[in-house]
Image (tube, rainbow, N blue to C red):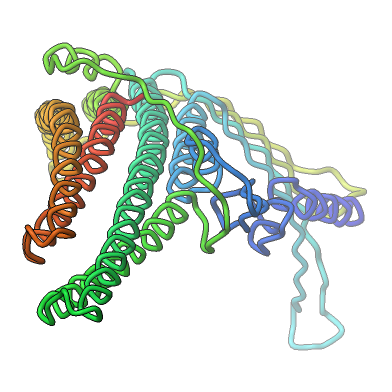
Length: 451
């Protein structure tokens, strides 16, 4: 019997050590590369799919972000934890069992003489089994709460993906804007440099003024400073976009084409769409349902719980002799008669949690409507601004050409020429700004609607 107990203990230890769950947990604890998932560490650009010199469209960049962004991975892991919580809740329906085995040896004497010493051993083992019969819906409510919490976590995963895509779009368009504004700044530098060379040449032949040269040099250097600022904005734009992708480096790649869904400007219709599919609203809806189930669970805890139990045990001094055994089967009912009012306070707390969740839904609903309204107004303004800016840019270009011609014939001053150049540069910048403001407004609408 002793050998059997030892072998049983050895097999149990081997089973626990060889458990696949434990092995996987230990591998994760050691941070083994084969189990590391994208988003749990910073991937190299090439691994993420960003090859040097490649041209990536907006859609391709979005897919990279969904794979590499840590926020998306964290949301996925939160959903995995919610799935485990649901499994734990469902385990309340399953029976529980326990097994024990032991051996005890003792030495004693029956008189003061050493010869009377006795050495005895005792073997024992037991098996227990317990299953829930009825608990007035407490376990069912716990399962329902966990199921709703899992649904909420899945919607939060969808929200995290929407946010990751939106950040890529937002920084994509910001970088595109920075590119174009930098190009405008470079063109201004070239134009101011050309103007500086002209006034210097006129001054050298005696047909120009010293003031014109000085003014041209100031304008040229100011244009250089503007170009440096625009170039820095480009580099900052790259850093922001790479972070949104989940990268910690600055790979050399090019931005490709993009195409976004175009939305209307009826805020009420957009709000109907948001109520139907926004992951942020859906998540709170499931949280409300989970809080309601928690309230059911707290109320069910007031009632008794009935369970069926079975146990068997054996014990003896020597495997060769008769053993003592015992079998027991019983129905148990358990109820709290008094626990200091904890059950009642728990019910009140769950009711407060339910009302809080409903308030959070109202708060989120109002915020979504406000954000939709802002995005629609931004879109309308950007559309109109883009049309006006194109006309203004054309007018400013024609005016600059006229002033340049007058200046060459001495009919316009350096100040007039500078004003015309500044107006032209500003008009070109406004065209760029309006164009990408419109794209950002469309991206914001898609994010709010959960698309």
